[in-house]
Image (cartoon, rainbow, N blue to C red; front, side, top):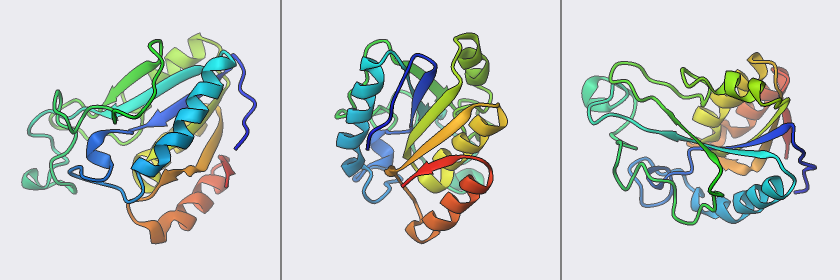
Length: 186
């Protein structure tokens, strides 16, 4: 997949964390297999002077999204645990921006833009296009792409470098994103 990156682009890698890859608390099938392609995109973006951003779920121990608190999900990505760490094969450059989301006990957040200040940060640095990949397509990638568009960024989703929690919902998710103005590279 060839993307022409430049200094006004940000590659946003969503939630490539141990708990979302095979063997994790909330594993997405095929998550680990995305890493070589994502690493190639990171290298290409970095070489072209684009910003590299990596988001992560960073939940407190007793987060509102956890099933025992009435939420949707089993406990996952608890702050300072192995599950919350970026996958060890993810090749983030040292200067990559790391964004933590869903850090409050009582509020869930799926988008890398939700209460993180990321949109303002990107705007201040002249970013006009956000290229998105990662996990999970039908949850946090979807929310991040929609928020990137709402924030006024040209938004490109790298569909082959994203995997869905519910694979049978992937096509509907991609159609929704395209309808919202996200360019989907298939």
